[in-house]
Image 1: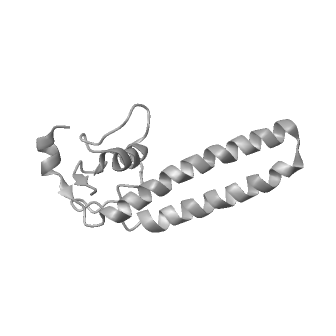
Image 2: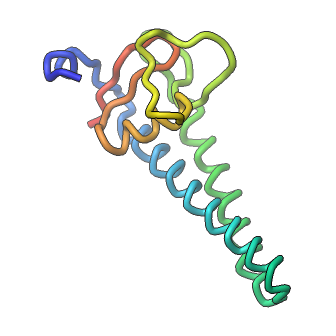
Image 3: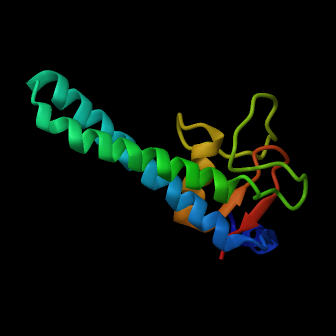
Length: 130
């Protein structure tokens, strides 16, 4: 993206909540990896002492996802009014961004963390998150 396009991007009024929701999504991805590792380790080794960390991390994952939903659900695109941190079926804007094989939602989260901007997957409006 050129610096001209970034200058034209709209600054979102709830930028702090967008950033928080994105970090919660990344945290939940990490927790999911740990849950899978603990599950596989528990099944392969048949060690009952692995069940406690598994249950604790699984509970933390559920809590993090619930908090993500609470924080991210009210966030909407200023232009079209759709929730750009929740991906639904249907057509996406030609300007919607994707990173490799990631879906539009994951790309939006990563763009917020790395670039401090997000492109609405439904209308293509770009929002600065600063």
